[in-house]
Image (tube, rainbow, N blue to C red; front, side, top):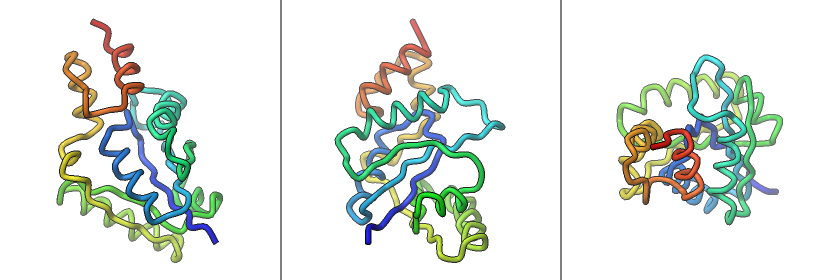
Length: 160
């Protein structure tokens, strides 16, 4: 039986840090659903479709990955796609409290849905979507921070 996990987030935009977690997750799951969360209360730089397309471009070589979007509760989406695990990245200790609360709530709503916390690689620890957006806004060098397709999309959002 194939093991399915979800890696959900806003991915606004996907970074090399996200890609690192995706690739490493595929070392221990057969199928990883990378799910762009639709959150109407957040003002995203990119539309949901743009984010899905950037993730597909960034993960095109990884056969383990399926990219989609979802609305509503993660546990309901997990049931729909048959996922047993929720992958969450922790860059800093400050991320842990919120992620821990979410993991406990998800377990409360679906006792068989486990959260797996992963730390980033040393090379990607400092990368976040908000930092990438700021670098792009000021026309900084995005090499090593995002896939070239993402850099191109950011350049369109922040023309010189």
